[in-house]
Image 1: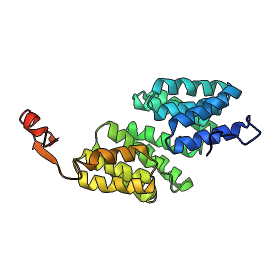
Image 2: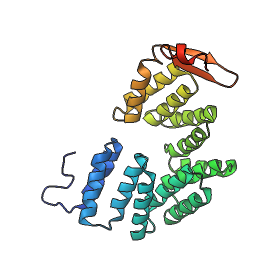
Image 3: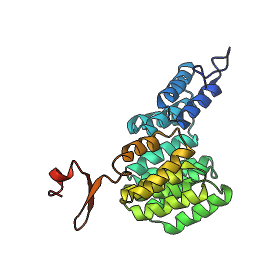
Image 4: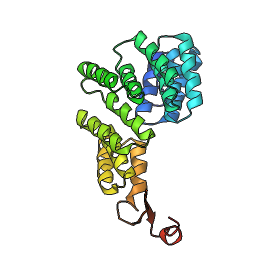
Length: 260
């Protein structure tokens, strides 16, 4: 897409700014996405989709406070904007504020009870809360409506990762890959989890597959670059303790190995 996201001769076409911002988010061009949404807000300072777009930009960049502020601004204009409620729910889940997250999820489902992202967030909340039966029920209902929607299992995987339960997270990521074998997300999740579990070679192969499926993804690319030397080439030495396996580069091992 070009530098001006609006159609020629119609610089106030708000939908074009939204579409351009969303496209920029899809390819991880956060500065361009931010410019598109800010350009929209210059034309209409209270446009809820403009504030939601900025909230998504800040959420992707881990600027959580700004994401929260923009989501709340969006809801001041449109209290039933599902995406804004889900941004707040995700922020609450990250900080384990379960009651607050539940409130936002219920608001999103109240606005649209069959929104796929809201249903996936509901499943994630239930999984994080230990409600296994509720999780399975929401997943079953969600997949009946949206058979290829990966969010139901990806959300559970993210909860397990935050809790360092990597073997269980791996199982959820494999479900994502099975549900959408042509998508990058499942392969990336499997690859990163395998790396965290010390299986770098198998993890690297999955990450390469993820990169083949989505060459724009900066996380996949940066991870491959980081792993390409030491992990792929087998340049790490292995030190085992009672509870840990630590891998050091051959330059680090003479200095840190005995301390480990």
